[in-house]
Length: 330
Ligand code: GCU
Image (cartoon, rainbow, N blue to C red; front, side, top):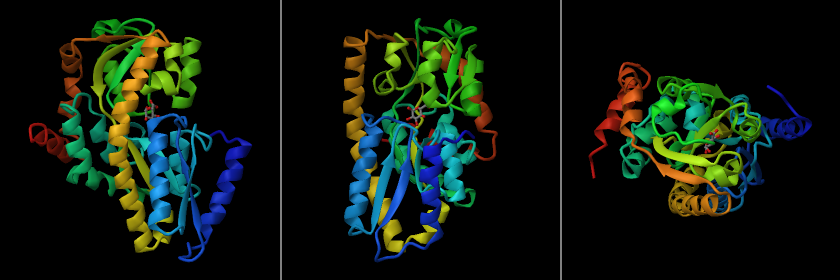
């Protein structure tokens, strides 16, 4: 792990904060780390959550948000959280599978039929069970944030898996993402999100995969001009709190944080739709990005073995069956 002075300073004060039990009378400030820009919808939704937490706890708990990976990459933030040196982090289920295997269930390509299916899982029993599965690993899930569908973007169109042959695609640091690119014929390169713009610009990678907001909020549309909508995965962002922090909160404070987090998920749902559409317009009109629709079936067929093997992986098999069972329910 690489540390800069700023991270050390902020984290050192965090350590001090968690070494004392939170008092019900003095205000406590919890630090939240994430890797997106202030313009990103998830930042706005977490600001909304922070306001609600302050309101519901009568100012006892405040949340200070550090965007843009100021406190480290998603992986570093998770490690800090486990040590109790950071209170809250927003990560993505893709990276979280290395910390809690249950999150791997979200990472199987084409597991969700559509957005309604995705929400039935996130808001239902399976979603809740996964959020509460990691206390012993040092963190507790609070809620999910919609992160749309992920597709490929590069300087050329990716219309079929054959177009990925020998193409270096940046993926999130996640074994499932690496496997997916291998099955599609590409060459996977795991990198932290903050390093991706430069990697695309310098040709360290040929392309990447994400939702359309990455083109604008992280400016990837400046360095990758074709967005090929194969929509291979729908992997939610996840808001997690350190188990050490959780234990220092009163039951009332825990309930207030959970309530605020759930409300921010719903706030985010509409905001996500609106801001994704705005990002697509901006990417097309001011950044010259071309959006192309692709025939999904060849992609679906190429990654099917991942679904089959997930059904045989003990840590996630029940979740996969549960998610599949919710595909047709209305
Ligand atoms: C999404 C997600 C981030 C993640 C990023 C990535 O944008 O919201 O949490 O870091 O994908 O591809 O790394």
